Image (cartoon, rainbow, N blue to C red; front, side, top):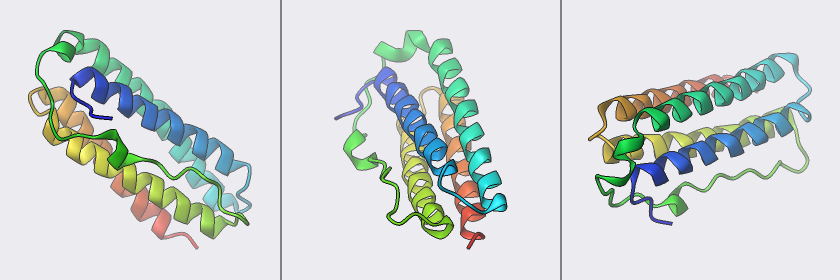
Length: 143
């Protein structure tokens, strides 16, 4: 689906975060190591905070939702792989989480460029992409 408006971009971003939240919640039930469980709990809490941030940005920029058209941003390029590994292990859960983080990072990086006409929103997308990279780095340090 083409994300041709700011409203569509924000709706998709919120959907990414909601799906990621569900993934991290499910993963928490499968992880056995306490340190990794703590990392996944942080990732889950991060999703909750990111949802609040995105909702605020959408609310504050509601008038811009129908103005500037956006070209070249397609939701099909950012499909999350949310299947739980079989069999689940802490290592495979981390690998799956890295894939989720990488997809989200790519979306926020590209989205930031596409919504640069809204400086606050583009800056927030840059910050979210940076958080995704921090999460990837953290997860790569695990088993």
